[in-house]
Image (cartoon, rainbow, N blue to C red; front, side, top):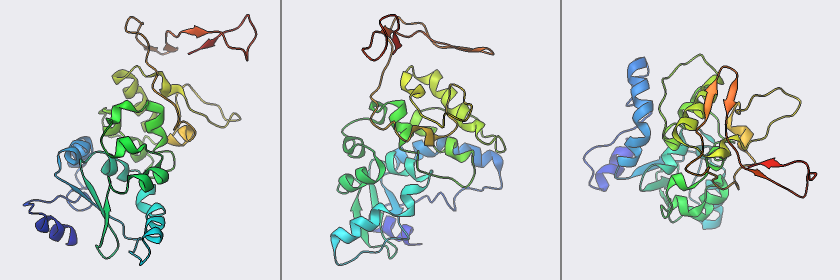
Length: 253
């Protein structure tokens, strides 16, 4: 395999390919691999991203334009491949090098909405708000409905059991687990069709498509924690007056 050849050229003794190194017939192995995959990428010396629908052209500008429309940037599972490793090198359909994540960060940022300082590693992933991280997956897709949640677990530092067959409820569980791990209120900063009934949590990352600008908001240290019951969510919020509402009303923030 070409990826193995690249690993040898870089003096690496071992290489792992997620498309062929996981026995998907074993639910236990699949679950373990999904749980550990983000950390595997984090601990890798480097990650090779193969863009089968991109070809190097004589014009570098044309090549970078092709990079932006590659299917690789629309898949759910490749988001963690982009963010977790310390180094990512991109290759085209003929395994010609397109550049590294750091050198291509401006073009990748324009394509994905991910800030350049996150891509270069100068800012940690956790510095981005929950809503902002959700927005990076808003236009991505997976073959299985559940995988749009499972592929984001490492990005939010949460773990939960795989329950294929639960459909969109997997994304609800992801948000609930994120609420356990963080008190960032921006998890509620999403938008959906007002004609469709919704609960407090979003049905999919697409609801966060307009949330890429939202900065982290965390309550003071002495605030009361979230409380979840069968009747809903209990949360303590700060009330602020706002010129857009009447003097007798306040906005929760």
